[in-house]
Each structure stands twice: as structure tokens, then as C-alpha cells.
Length: 313
Image (cartoon, rainbow, N blue to C red; front, side, top):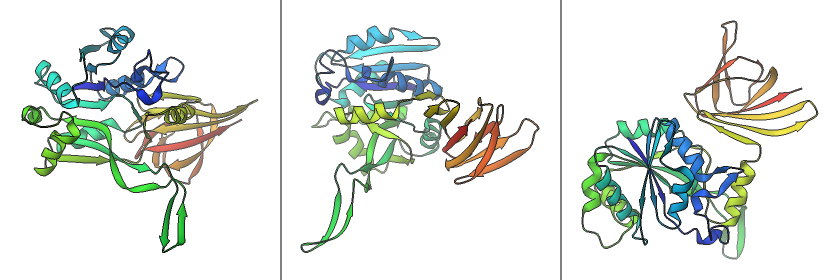
């Protein structure tokens, strides 16, 4: 399995920030860009070879990351002019046709449990599996009878799912990318074709997902990253530090294990469930709403994606 990132967009709605910077290099926090986060996601999924499918200012991405780091190897396929995502994937298949591909749009940030997504895709009969998520309306939504409003919901989650820009493409899907199509984008060619043949699957997960398409989106994701540090297993986010009082959130992906670093804290499970193994060998299971005292070296094993609020003095 290889990783690939569609990173050729102009980022027009992020101008003037993207006048001399490709969108993927826009920072979520100091010295930590969208692509830095995506590379970490690939690495934590066991991927060691990543292809950047670039265009606009693609040379800056290559300057930033070079040929790789540690055991990771980076490759760059740059378009001289936009030719559509279909042609980007054709170029990738021509370069590397013997591996499954974990493909991402280069302007999204998510806490998706990639290990679970990959496992779902590999076990399925689908040639391509995509991560889908519910979209929050940018506007207030009303229901009305005639001229009377019967309900009002401010920016609710909509009932429909959207394509979240994360795909697992099996190598056996290659031929579908080289059929004759009128259009040049995957969304208008390969995806509808596979859906018609019932070979396109979807994976749902209730987790953070954001497409960074505007200044408002960028402000929102930077706010999310204030005090936050990502790890392969999830993240730690400092909510409040005052004198000796600390409020910290731990987000642990299902199937991951984390050893606490705080000396002693009171924990409340905000969502999910987790198994706690004490240093004396005893264990307990905590679920949403439960409160418990936790100590340094307690081993937390997430049974589902879990958010824990820790309070210490």
C-alpha cells in the first residue's frame, strides 16, 4: 500500500495567503501544516512511500519535504497545467500499479481512525472505499407550513452524507481509470461508474473532519489546534492552565493504547469507552459520563474512539 495526496489546487479562496504558498503548506499551528498532519496519518497507518500529486507551486512542497524523512520515501508527480483528478491518478497508476493506494485530498484535516478504515476497505468486496461524513449546514435551517415557521435549527448537521476526500483504491480498480470519459474528475467518471456497478463502498465514522476552503475554515481549524498536539494514537489538547490547575483533553482512537503522563488526575469520559489497567494489575472499564481517579502509568486502551477530560491540581 502506498499513500498519495492530491495537492495541486490553487487555493483561490485562501488568497492572499496562497499567492506564494500551496494550500497544503498552510499552517494549522506554528511549523505544522496540513500536509505535515497528513504525512503523520500515513505513517501511523504503516505507509512508507508517499506520492504528492502536485501542480500549482508544487516545487515548494518538494522543497519543504525533499526525498523523505526517516523510513518515509517521498515522490512528486507535477502537472504543468490542471488536467483533473482522473489524469492525476492515471499518472500515478503509470508510475506505480502494483500497490493499493490510500488517497487523500490535500486540503482536509481529520481525526479518522485510518487503521479501521483500511481494515474495512481491505475486507470488503468494493474496489474503492471512501470515507463519508455528515456536513454541518453553514446556515440556520427552518421548517415552515405556509408562512409560519414551525422549527428553527442553527447550523445543524444535515441528514445527507458527503464525500470526505479519503479513499482506499485497490490495485484491481486500475482499468476503470483508463476507460474513455467525457470529464476529467474522479467524481464525474470513476466514482459514478463504480457506484453503478455496486463496487464503490463507504465508511462512516463520527469524528473531526474539516475541509480548509476559506479563511473562515482556516480560523476554525486553527482554533481547534490551539493547545493541541497530535500523536499517532490521537491527540492531547490543553484546555486551561492556571497556576497549578490543569484541564486537558485526551482523544484516543479505537484500538490504541496510551500511558498517562500526569501524576494524578480526575477523569471524565466525554464520549466513547476505555479500559484502564492499573499499575497493580487491576482493570476497570469506563464509559461516557463515568468519572474516575487516574494515575501516572495507568494504561488506557480505547474500546471505541474516546475523549477523556482530565483535571489535575
